[in-house]
Length: 142
Image (cartoon, rainbow, N blue to C red; front, side, top):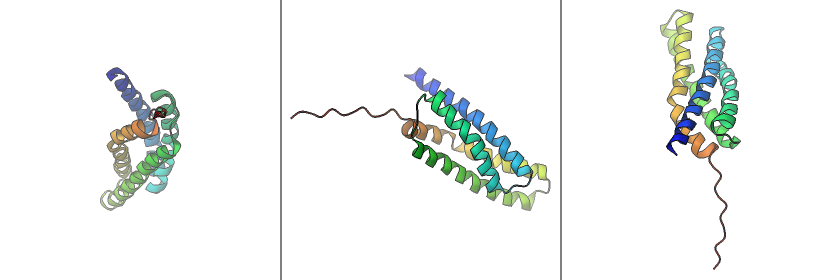
């Protein structure tokens, strides 16, 4: 059992690294070219969300997940990231003159949001989205 859980964690982590890299690059490019943090977050979220779901579903858990809970979790994560990056952008615009360093700081806040929620997402995916279906109950004869 421990080996299976460890392998699941490793696969989830690897799929998250891949999707985070795609998402992070998309965010940094969008923000660098002047998109508002909210729009950059949405574009980056879509860019990383597609490989994340496919890899999580097919490779990590090896089964279809429930779409509504998945959507709630990832949209919630994106909303938190949008809020954090918008607040960070506001502060960076006031305190940092260099566009390069503004991009680094705001992109770092985008990454930090997803990193902070990494374990929570694993738990929610494992217990809610990709959970083993409950065994059918057999009626008890009286």
